[in-house]
Amino acid sequence: MTPEQKKAFERVSSNLAPYVIRQYPKRLDLENPISQAYLYSRNQDGTLKSARDVGVKHASELFLEHVNSIQREGGVFTEMGEEGLARPGISADFPEIESFLNRSDRRKSHDTNSHPSRALRIVIETEAVQLVIFADSTEPATLRDRRVEQITDAVSRVTKAGFSIPSPLEFYLPKYSRGIHLPSLRVVDPWNSFADFYAPNKIMLSPQLLSTSPPNGAPDSVALELGSPSAAIIHEIGHCLHFAHAPERFVDLFHTKLSPRYQRAASDISGYAARNPHEFTAEVFTAATLKCTIRPEQGELYRALGGPLPARSAPQRTVDRALLAELNKSHFNNQRTLAAAAAMRTTAEMSRNVTPLASLSWTGHVPEADRTNSRKFQ
Image (cartoon, rainbow, N blue to C red; front, side, top):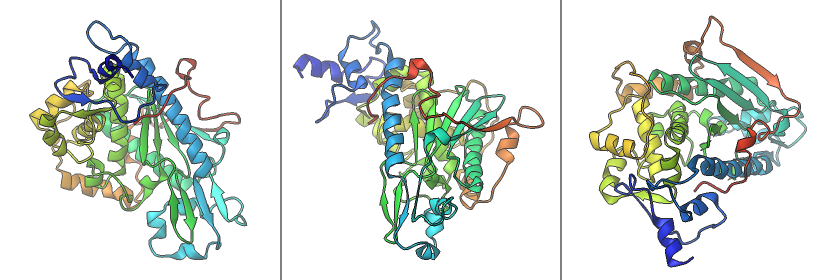
């Protein structure tokens, strides 16, 4: 790379320059559409050209990469039958075990994800947004319903806080997002995430969010502090709204870190918020949705980074974090509730269509404009 290209790569738009720094990484994939965008000429105001298209292109390949990894390596594999599954706490830490125990062929010593062509397509119509959920058709209904309830709870909280959500919003629920090998409990984690957003409107969720305690390796986040799977999903919705609200800033924030003067403000939200500007924005969004305190300098930084703002005023209820923690722990304790779903009904009965699709793939639903190759989010 020439010195001129390096300088172009490190440039950020003028409205971001006071808040973030981008440095040329040690290793850079120049085929990555994000990297390429930084090397091209910018708009007159310094913003990236075709930022939304670049972001969607970038996310599409990452999504396919993760789906393929999960299909290839996700599942439960055992050499001893089911005897070792009676260990105390194993189902709490590994909610996927229930799927394994309910596999269609109990003679098999393994169970993996079904092919995406056999996915269930669940449509939930609300006044605010249409939710389209793709679930593994062989996952036990008890698990699938709990995962859907986590989604409806999170979406309900976001809309009640006054935010507008792009419609449709798609969720992908693989039955297995990691490989669990018994009896050693060795874990192969090809995805290495609990939840991920893929522009413009896809969110993939791990069954680990059904754990009765925060999963091992969960980041130091607002969701971890509250012990809430709903907060983890709200965080991903925050990424989605950030991209929808300010795609030029969202795409320009890759490979950046917060300026030193803002690191402390970010750290006071959570350790995860201090990791990079994308995570800071999603963490502040989560905290704001759950009525946690946001200091003025944190709000200033959030707005400068393009963080989404409520489209309407939300009810000014004050709920402290201790109370929120107690409310949210009920989901980790598997105390199922339909309150969130009921709150989202547009009529006496919410439209909830569950359809097995004979020829669905997890890419087949993507509009033609979004079916582009891309590289990996970093």
